[in-house]
Image 1 (cartoon, one colour):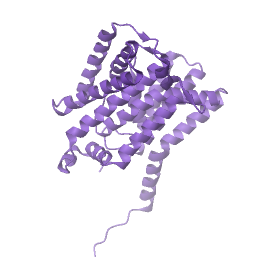
Image 2 (cartoon, rainbow, N blue to C red):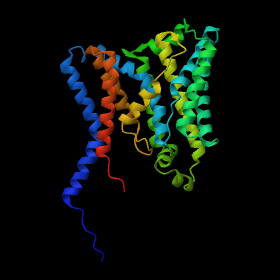
Image 3 (cartoon, rainbow, N blue to C red):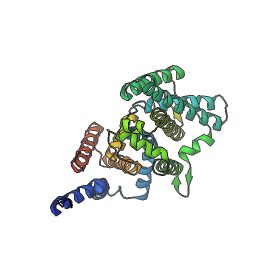
Image 4 (cartoon, rainbow, N blue to C red):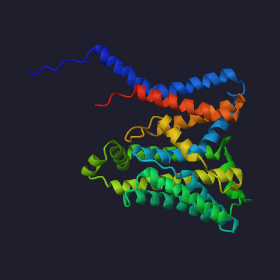
Length: 325
């Protein structure tokens, strides 16, 4: 009988503590941030402010769902802000031309989805790295948006459309319900379908996924198409709230989405993470933004503080990650 030495109790307990902290560390950090802001500002823990935080988090939250799927495969999508802009300006323009709201909304979602598919095809067919392919789409889509709008905003949109950004149901803004629906759909897709398992396998080991029969090219196109769809949907909510489709709308949104996903524990290497962490990461970043505003922190310092918090979150995640075998 072979004798396998038992793992020392101290080593096992250390791994247990590391796994516990890795799983719940973000939640503790979020609760600690809420406690600190509650003590520093009496305006923070009010129902109006908490609803405002959730409302402000909806745009980044919806984009981050698609970004999570992309990063889980080991890719990245730098084009979401520009895809958002082109999709919503086309949709807003159709509404201004008298097209039905439903037609304009479907057109905007279709544009976002198609641009995402083009990203995926450039990666799979042309073998362009995701960073370069989506960086190129970022530039092209932004340029097309400026050409299409001639640099002018599109305003005065129909009330029926504006409801998705300004409507309220049972005291809760419609964008919050919509965001929860997107997260729920994403969670079902990742955890209750074969496609979710394939996405994790691709991120963990692409060659093994191919050998296991996963259609890696098709799945790559799919996740980038979903990312484009989510960007367009988030843009529609934003434009409906603002009643204005600006040609520069969405600039920098890709970095906010990536920050939310990575702070939420999804690994840049792929194959590790999920939407629960992304939701927490989105809320943490938006709560931080809200707290800095309530404390009258200079906008010049806001980016510095956000960068430090994101860096600390990444360092903590790295410190509590299990050792590589």
